[in-house]
Structures are given as C-alpha cells and as structure tokens.
Image 1 (spheres, one colour):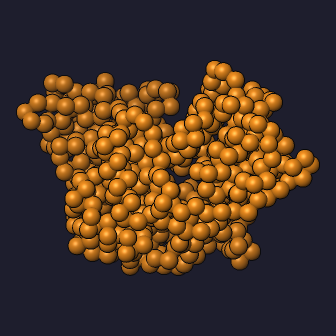
Image 2 (cartoon, helix red, strand yellow):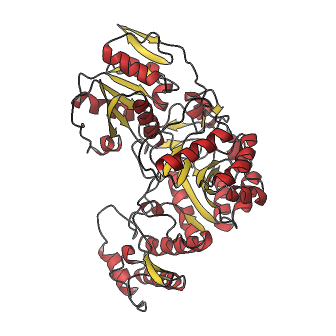
Length: 535
C-alpha cells in the first residue's frame, strides 16, 4: 500500500506587481536601457545587491545573503507525521510544481492519492489539481482533506467522480483508517468524519473531534532549524474575510505546558532554533498567554507567532514577550477606520491598533503589521484613515494587501445585497469586482499611490515584500531599528528606476541612498569607491 501525498501552498499570485521594473525585479527580463543609464549617471553602472557588504567585527559580511532556511509547510509537516506514525509508505509531491506545470509523478506505483486542499480557495484551483491527477494517475482513487473540501464536500463529491472520499475535520485517526480501507477495498462506514461513495450514493459520516491536548503533536525525524507549530484548531473569532472557522467550527487549544514541552522536544530531537506558531492568533486565550509568559523564559526557545492587536496592551507585555524569547509578532490591523473594522467584524478598534503599535514601536521585538485595501464597504475616504496612519505615524515592517474576493465561503457574502458586492469571475483571483465603496480598479490605484507615498514620506515604515528572498535580518549582529534603516534605504534605492520618470532624478535618488547606506556601514561592492552622481 503506497500513497502519493500532494500537499503545499496554493497557486501564488502577486498582490501587487510592485517590484516590476525595480532593481528587485526577478522576472528575468533584465534591466532596460533607461535603468542602465540611470545607474551609470549615479556612478554605479554594475550595481549588484549580491556584492553589498556591511562591517562586522572589523571585517566585511555579505548583506543580501540568499535565504538558507525557511519555515516548513505546516500541513505537509503534520500529514507526513501522521503517515509515518501509521507506518504507511508514501511519497510527497509539492503542489507548487502542479501550479507551475513542472511537477512529475515520483517513481513507483501508487494505490491512492492524498490531496490536501488547505490552501485552495476555488473550484478552478481544485479542478487544476484534479486534472493533473487524472492525466497521470487515471485509475488511482483520490482522497481529499483540508479547508476547501471541508467546506465544499457536497459539491466536490457530486462534480468530481475521481474523488473517492473526503476527510473532514481532524485527520490524525481518520486519514490512516481511510488509506488502509481504500487500499483494501473496504467500506468507510465506520470511519468518523469521512464523506464517501457507497456505490452510487454519497454518505456523510458524523464528525468527531479529538482532544488535541492528549493527542501527540506532529514529529518528524531529521534536522529542522525552524519547526512550524499548531497550538489550536478552529478560531474563537468571526472575521468576515476569513472562512477558516466554518471549516473547523469547534475551537480547541493546547495548554501552555504542552506547548512548552512540545517545543523543548523539537529542540532536542530536531535541533530546532526557532518555533513558528502558525495559529491565526497564538496569543489567545489570555489565561494561556499569561501562563506561557511565566514558563517560556526558562525554556529558552525562540519563537514567533500571530497575535490580535487588542492582546498587545502595554510596553510591559512586550517586555514579557521578549523575556519569553518571542522573536516576532504578526498582527492584522487590517484598517485604521472603526467603520471598516466593524464591517469586517474584526472585533478590535483603531484605538486598540494604535495602542499595540505604540507598545511595539521602540522595542527590540520584531513585528509586521498587515493592512488591507478594498474590503467591501470601504470607501476611498475611509481608506484615507489607514493611509494617513501609515504615512504619518507608522514605523516598522508592514504589508498593504489588495483585497481579493477569491473564496466563495467567506462570511462577507452575507452582506452581498447590503454592500452591493459584485464579482466578474469567482474563480479568478485577479477578477474585477465592485461594492458600495469602490471597485477593484479604484483599489489598485489607491494601493499603488499609498505605497509610493509611504515610501517617499515616511522614513520609518518599511514595506515587507522583497526581503523574503534573503536571510533575515540582513544584519543579525545589529539591532532591529538599524536593520530597518538599511532596508528603507534599499527599498528607495531599488524602486528608483520604477518611480522616477526623470533619469537624473532617479540617479540622484540612487546616489543619495548609497551614501546613506555607506554611513550605516554598507558598501555596494568589495572595495568599490562610490562615484559622484552626474546631472
């Protein structure tokens, strides 16, 4: 009995093609004549970020080092652990290869395909994966699980006859049982949480929820410098732009003590240097957070996680997080308009967002804050409250994401008539949409204008976009604020060819940023002198 596990992220798409035409552009088109002329006039015709170095301990170190470690995909990590614990033979195929068209079936024969839909959001995306399987493994039964099929199992089973079963809810017990039953041709009638074909009929078995406190957490052999971690299932909140709670309605969470013990085991067994808590909000409930802040300092395990803004209430809490070895928080502010936050059912206020920001901004705790443009009901004037905050007040890493109505299961559809939500093609993430406040063309223009405004007018707000290709921090020996200053210079330097229509103005911007980088100990090339800009 051998399974092909198809798992990974969904088809990626660039929220905004913001780096196109910049010095960070990796599309392979190369630098055009205008950019080359701009660099020549800046005195750095052969500028290469790979040659940038910074001073450390009396020597020089490469600044932009290609990323050497990344967070393993949580769903893959978990599913592989389940299959290994059940002593099931399998091969893993990353879905990224399916989306890119480069995937090939691993060697050997397979008795079942296990398709994860956790990062799929539409029928078109799911159909792409099913077509790939049908062309290459036409007679092999397919078992699905994950977010999309948890919500759309009736449609999937009705419209895709190649799907033999859908595992809903927890997979730790159900998945091995289904694999063994399918391989042996046995009935799935006794397997909880499974939707299956009984001849021409589709049967839906009752859901059962496991106790994640007593269930062993995922374990894989080998070295994992960064280990992904899931401390809860479900979510206690009801944000209208997220369908996750509908797929896992019962909120359950592990105790602080189990979390600590799991993390210490990953350090011992996998040589983990950091834990990446992937929960939508790791810092709830507050009783667990208080216990974590009490017991994690002695554990000595470095970690990052997602938080709600109203959890970060004071500088004292930030100090406690640092003592507990928290490395970074990811926080969704989404908007700085109370009206928009209410439309989202975010259950935080702009005042709470601002309070969290003030607690974080001068600390050494890393953070990235996520904002959104275009949520149904948001007008250009309401977005102006978010834009003004980013331009005038914000400091640190941020992302400004273009809202995409890409998931038909989002609770926001309850407001379709009231907010006059219209969408051209629900299966296309780039599709045109409109609502009572704006349309997608308006939102694209507002996003681009805001990002340009933030880049030029705010010295302290740093867009987190290009950094993912490099080790982070760029200068790990230095503090957060100094790293942010260097990243801001790099951002302004790299975007100069895209944003400056006048070649001489762009050359002066590049030259100015190179001088600022030099003042921070960064050089554009080993021993290279910085030539004067020509006008």
